[in-house]
Image 1: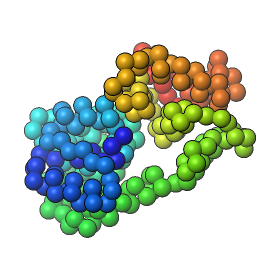
Image 2 (image 1 turned 135 degrees about the vertical axis):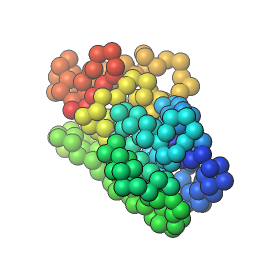
Image 3 (image 1 turned 120 degrees about the vertical axis):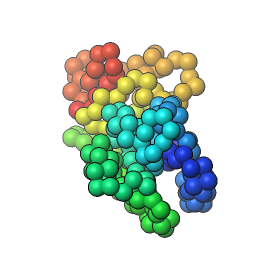
Image 4 (image 1 turned 90 degrees about the horizontal axis):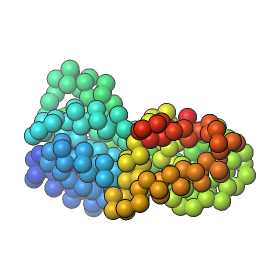
Length: 220
């Protein structure tokens, strides 16, 4: 998964921001329009989206809305649109922050670092009777360690980070396995079955990982 997806139609500005972020050891992808941004996000995901509003084709507001329908990925809007209504619209659609252009690169980098620290620097996640040690990739149920493969751990983490949201099968598969495998349906179905056997009190009537028929799965 890419650390940061930058959506910026000013190629020079986008590449400059990429250089600053890569110098801080982030993995970065850059695209210049909304259609490509959504395509890259569907295939590879991102831990943060830095999003311009005025884009060719579909605008940044539409991109923000679409991403927020599928996940809780942090979105930082960076735009020359400075009207109060534009800022409110971005935040209402689900953006985590809104910064005006021209921006101070140090302030933008600090905001990005802050998002990563708040969202991803946690060492543990607790959800009901489950406890995930993110540093050691260990899962406990009622304080008893559960043997879990790396993919199962990544899958459970993705579900908990998006608690209450219906995740499409294609999105889940691309987040965990990438877009290059040819065994999407079988692989995902089998891993969901294994994960339910390990974390559910009754795997045949799962309380946590629920099937949303015709769409995907939801963690509750």
